Image (cartoon, rainbow, N blue to C red; front, side, top):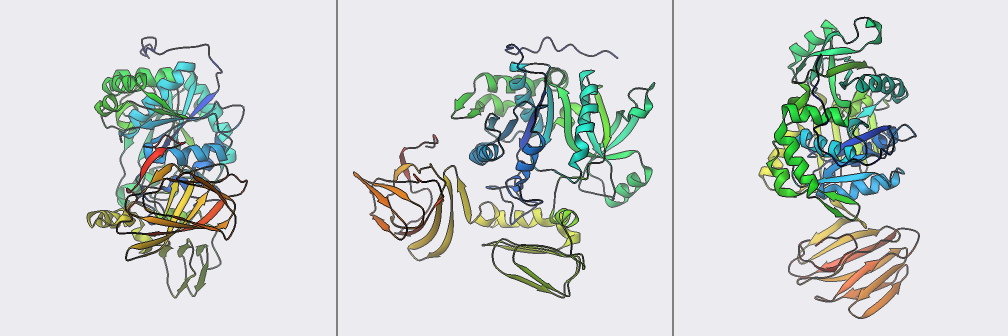
Length: 492
């Protein structure tokens, strides 16, 4: 077999820092399939849905250790501080974050990460994965990675095919080809015969029974040089435009912002179409990791710990004479009686009730909400910011009440509003408040009034989170009524 040389892929190469595996984590998503918990402003990878850690936190933990270089995470601008906080919480402060200026599918995201990694070492292995997958058997991963690494060093792009146990219609499939090493057929590495798009139930059942089909996990392992060579061979427009976007990128705090114009010229294609379905370097390793991409609420029922009646209950939930249900409450008491095979999800501003057989249809509900311009389709009642978060408590005519939490050592921008005044009451912690020329120190149960138009800032000098209640009053209370004069986080 003849492979294209990767030598003509122009990168700025320094002395290799290591020859370990570089994790590449794709943190995209529109936040529709697990609505109302997952939304565009805070998609599922930032929630603790399948364990006590967030899903991206679990992913980062799987990539920790001496075998791995610091991760590269590719995300959009709106999620940059969420990603940075997850890197910090999981001990990955030296990870790099690439910001996409627009959605351009996985081929462009992977091209950007491969080009960045190749600047350090073109032969580093890229372990490419989504931020939001779950493994029930993560202890099996090291042996599979070791086998995949050896194959990737031979110049192949290795994909991880997950052994199916049900006729799943929400996943793509891979059909196994001939053994990659005919002299050693027992090593369980195969060529890829073909990729199959998400099937209907009949076709999925046929493939399950055939035994030579695997779920396409969307997880790959390849050297940066091979991935770049195959992108150049099959989708040169993706590679060239992303290369220009990276060359003209800007460093913003700890983020690498890709240049917009060049990036927008990149074709909007997946890595499956751009490379994997066309390359002669594709190899697949069957893996029994108990993998799930958690693509709907029924998947969380399947993963969850069930009671004697087959129910999964998360949060403040009471069940009576109910069977095989998934019930989740993000706050208020939720009581269910006499129901079977339902999903019930309760948040502070929305409730979802759906039969488990229709779990794939949640996206259609979100589409209806978007057509009706409902904010609940996109934004949570709790909104996260780089300094902490706020959530709405009460909204009425010309006033609203919010809870604000500021993390230790963080501060809001120096700002003013044209249409509202604010009253802050400290509930816990210590606050330093700038009000025009004044600087005030507030403790628990103390308050301050900020008249319309005054310059103000809030910061937490303490070691515990600062919590306060904010009462806004005025003719217009939108979040866009803000003028920033100074901002630690580079926001305009």
